[in-house]
Image (cartoon, one colour):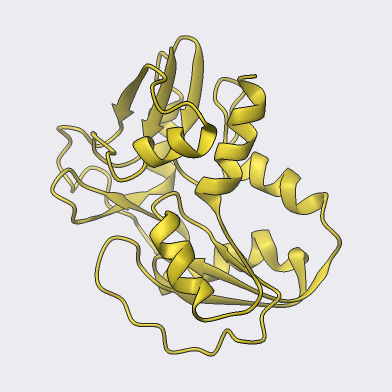
Length: 202
């Protein structure tokens, strides 16, 4: 059985059913672990912008979570079988499938593009996103657009070769929205991870 670990609260019915469909395995049995299930928000509050991760609470609202706290929690999780982290943040672990590593490998295999925009949920995440993904394009930009609350897009993406949606909260509806804003390629982290898992589970 596959196990999905969200840094937010379970159930992640906004992510997992669509992810399984993209994998071509809609009926695959799975279980979920939510790192902030039953935890007081003061415990996982980020200390600064560099420490900020964003996820979803059970009621659909936004959760702001400390990266350092997540690292500590992941080190304590007991997970048998195939365990997949549902977060694109940068982590080190030999026990889980980490989207960051999957996505980094995917982009490393691509030729360097010219104009690239990385989309993250919060503006404060742009600095860390640029450190990770500026290598993808000669002219890489970052914009904030939340998958968890109402957002407006105020930038022109019409000339971008690639728009990459850097959060597992971005799904097919967000890809479709951004395709109305650019003639370039639009890819979500969710789709890249699903393609990897589909091949992994063949």
